[in-house]
Length: 164
Image (cartoon, rainbow, N blue to C red; front, top):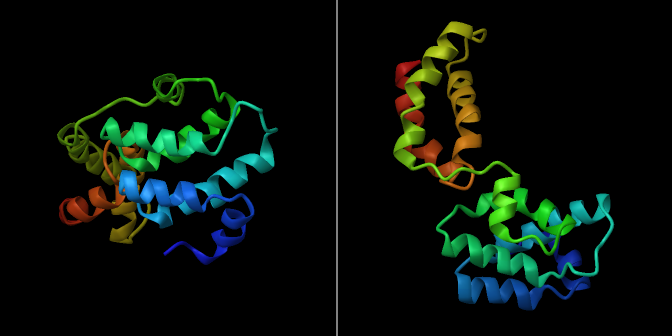
């Protein structure tokens, strides 16, 4: 089911076939694709002029590229801005432009002890949850595109909380 606040934009721009295609062929939840169009793309369109080379099909093509590369779809939100502004730019170049680096999960996890130590040195809050949020916030730039932030949080929050 798609978010209710996306329906008007989706129907007005005839995006149902693209959302269905992403769901059927790419196995991407309609909720994600609808939000990408009606929240992220709509916001970008409100800030930047449209270029004739950009089409909504490019959004689905971007998602297909990310799936083929086994990258987390969350990075599509950052990539979409550059795709909209430079519709002829290839996806690999967009990844370079946004500073994406492919990092294995194990390498991301290896940063946790350093971040915990750094948090303990600079800690100002008595709330133990603040430490988890601080560590996750510092991991998020590394994790974006490499691993789902919610999966990372679910799998490692107890480890972080135990050490803080």
